[in-house]
Image (cartoon, rainbow, N blue to C red; front, side, top):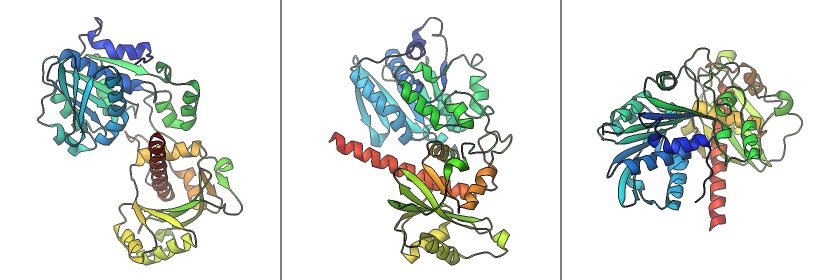
Length: 416
């Protein structure tokens, strides 16, 4: 198997045996997306482990085990098998036994989703740990994983995309790399020779503002200003009659004291159009509405359109039950990961895959008011003027996940 590697990627594969770096206890790689960090890091981690230990136990950690398998172990195992490694993956038991030249080591998979995740890795004794997307993991999980590396010669491998410069990992590890006896390597897209120029340009077009600086330029930049600076009424707002669409979805951000915002979306030739909306603020109107009254508005918004699904704020349990009780619409609980959702919306806006009818005045108004919270120490939007923003985020997360699943199914059928 021939893999073209940049000088920086080669360093990642060999640093532990290079005279100038072999005394280091850790390696940190950060920088742009698609810069070749992950494959070289994971491959280097396994090569180091299998060269340095026999019957050792190691941890490979991601935000979740699912994302770890998708982003790391699936491409890694394919590469290793092509190099002559024997890989025995026990998915239900959460580990992979990797054998090379008669030597076997075990690699346990862990997800660092939240503070409770630290308990999952507690008690194990490790010869090394690889933490992918470390900036997305809680500090308690990361520090518990590092504390498990008590075997002599153990080393720590960190991989991440940039975040806010006040992030604990940036302050405690990247800025103190020398103090931590860690090798720090910063990657850009130019460090990935396998990335075609046209693909590089496509990624540059996907992001703007803070996320462009982080994911394309690889900078640790604070979020500031409007959340969606790429929104342009001249580009994203359409007028006239509602287009004929292939299918329809409705997204709901439900509120009692706060406003409720529902959007009717139609898909036409790969573009989702917000053709109508319902927005009700009890504070502004002076009268609260019941679940049944909001449901009546949902029925009116849907009209005669065949609605595939109503995507609802997951905290709106009573409203979800109200919808189910009426029996007309299928419901889905929305994905409420705020920052990931914002990135998805930003990418869809920049790519021209979201359009808004001029009558959807509340979501157009909120685009100009929805801002990042100053000095938040993390990516946190101000909790004002965000109700249509939230229902759009719920919709985009659902639609993109559905599109990805359809693409995966089509590719699977093609391969068969």
